[in-house]
Image 1 (cartoon, one colour):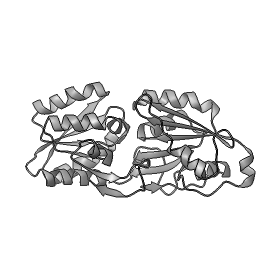
Image 2 (cartoon, helix red, strand yellow; image 1 turned 90 degrees about the horizontal axis):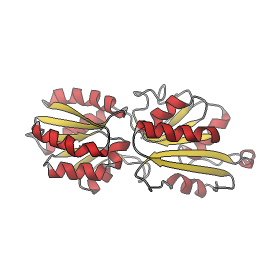
Image 3 (cartoon, one colour; image 1 turned 60 degrees about the vertical axis):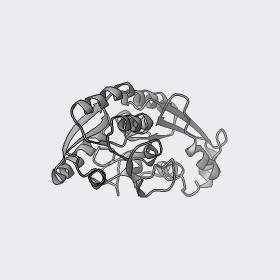
Image 4 (spheres, one colour; image 1 turned 90 degrees about the vertical axis):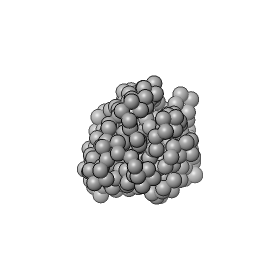
Length: 281
């Protein structure tokens, strides 16, 4: 996991201090006279709430309705839904916090003036959110969970070690998720070295998943790599269940998918679930 520093103006540094790392230094006393308006957008199912940021801000002395207001929107893990949510918040916030790559890309598209902190984003340099890890520039900074091409190569290697006889592997990702292009480029090089054939499998919604797995079966797919992203995280239980039903050994990006039935995962811990660090489950 990588934290991106920046040489932005003091106003933005104050926001990043309370939102980006969730463990940062207190704001100067002079800044505490203002009620900072923070918007938060995350992917999830209807009725799901995301409280980790507010809880940590409370620990640091920033109280909802007193010196901050935090408005959270949890929407479908789809680019259009993310854009609609962010667009609705922008006129009334001083800082935007976005969870997932698709939310980060949506924020980049919609604003160049409101400071944006992204969390749980893959390869922010490769997908164009920031200029570099050391000097992001612009109005965006945050935390990445996958900053290196080696991550996906390792996932494919792990899958091959678990099921050495496999020759054809499906790569499951969400249409419109910028993680897909980055992951595919990483996987193609590793696949050539391992003697594996990759079959891209893009889905638009959870309703498409059963048909996608049926297609894998018809094509005699022998293994599955699941691209880490908001869509695959939200639908992890269904993906794990379908992989089991179709007898496909699968490798995922998040531990939480293994908990609900996925075979194995390799990657950083989600910011919502504990400290950073690559783990194999």
